[in-house]
Amino acid sequence: MLFLLFHVGTNQYAIETSRVTEVIPMVLLKKIHNAPNFMSGFFNYRGLVIPVVDFSHLIKGEPSQFYLSTRIIILKYPDLENRVRHLGLIAEQVTETLDKAISELIDPDMNLDRSTYLSKMMIDRDEIIQCINLVDLLADSEQLFLLSGAIE
Image (cartoon, rainbow, N blue to C red):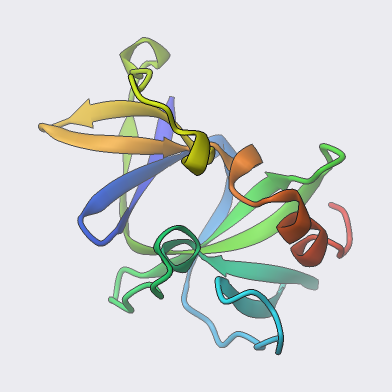
């Protein structure tokens, strides 16, 4: 299984590439006032209005650092009714992929109730990489706010 890797600070994360539509450079986003702090804005992606979430801000309350490798990952995101929507995710150091067999993924031996978006882990070059569970990335109320646009 192929994963796209990215960082938040020194922590490394992975998303299945089957969920990724495209990885694009940072673009100018239209800010929406009174939106949640992790909501960076919207932009026009090939005729679709795509909401963009800052992953670092979402999980640790601090905006992503803007490196040359900070990107917007366009994701196929399942909404509350399991319809596919597109969601932009700002992530740092989006520079590589990693191919791992499903059998190499490790179940964490800890309670992740507060971080339900975290899934299995993998180890590569002594680095622990945390997989992201997209279904639980956003709370239901956040999904209703962000994903009320057109369905793919």
